[in-house]
Length: 561
Ligand code: ATP
Ligand code: MG
Image (cartoon, rainbow, N blue to C red; front, side):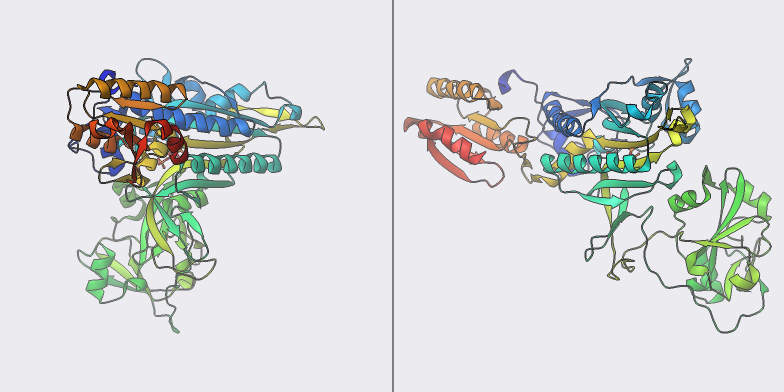
């Protein structure tokens, strides 16, 4: 490709709204441009990288027996209603006004729809179906460039099996394929246990990249390798204290005290002596959730335990249910279901709200005063807590999710009536898995991990071009002719070459652009070396430069690539 005739609008300055390196560099290299919040156009250079990633994904998916589909993005809404996901996705789902259509945010429904009635017998399975398709999600806060877009490319795959063992096998095939894909892309990733409870599944893992720009939080044990999304991560923590003697329950006037901090300051107590109360609504029913002191409710764990659609109660609901506002709610006298974090199981002498504004209750003994309470692990793990596997200290950091493999089970096949007949002639719902990769996220994460102060550093696998030829002075006929010859030869040999043949920019500008674009090898054709029949070759990653005779250039390229 000749730069003089190409659309590669590089930028010298850091674009205004870009903060993270991949976003800045993808804009500066002219690979992408924003059309609207969370909606990006891929320009020719960027799209070349997308095609390389999707090629790797296709090869690895085909290698595990995947069959490629191409499903419509425009879906009849009624299919989404059959699985209740119009409600579950809520505002994330894009609706087509005046038509009963939605833009697909994922494709479980449509794949299951196609399996229904066609995959009828145990003999028709296993199946692995995949596609690489645009997804639409009305993300409330699109950010970090293509990492969280409202329109993005996903490889989504679905497996159809007749048994749990079959699903386990399909799942492990995907696990292997995903490792191959990310290894081949040159991404440093790790795999974490993830949430699956709410989806009715039985196992789920996420492929993650450590990054400050990440919106997922991961607990990680350096010692034993335990890694889990904090949505599901476990740790060992000290139980709330149980004193020898339980005091009597007493109502205390606490004017204007609303938060745990205010309560601690007012009563001169420690936060571990408090039971924090939160009201959630699970499928329409109120549930009081009690946590120790300043522990946070883990809503993913909570949803997995309660099942169905779980949300925090609204202020007016709290008042109706308890007679008090948030900050004055507590377990004593509460008339609905109560669950608490395991930490509180044996606690006594606790303080909590009195279900009466401006009052709290002290001396609560969980066993004596809240006997109906059920206990679960409901916490959000924090850094420094103890690993449940090896007793070392856990680290907690931000990460970007690149991919997700998920044992769905029968949630979608049951909802859509996709059943099969087994050897004995009995009918069962098909057992499914679903497996996603965000293609643009792979690209952005590669850049996040491979850049320096000058620009991107591509490895040959994902690089838009392997070689960039820089003709330092196109006004020199000799340079122009030799460069063209080189460009044609290398292209004929099968290398992907981008030739900076522009005659209206300075040599310095070309050097900077080449470093910014970051192709693995640069070949510099300049007056001085060319006089001796030589060119300079530079490895972008190491900055290693050598002057090579034109007749040994091919060997040198082979060696360096
Ligand atoms: P997240 O938790 O980041 O919102 P998700 O759990 O909603 O992701 P899945 O539904 O599992 O994501 O989608 C599969 C993959 O699609 C993700 O692993 C991610 O790589 C990618 N992906 C999801 N949402 C977006 C988005 N808004 N922009 C770009 N890629 C996305
Ligand atoms: Mg996910």
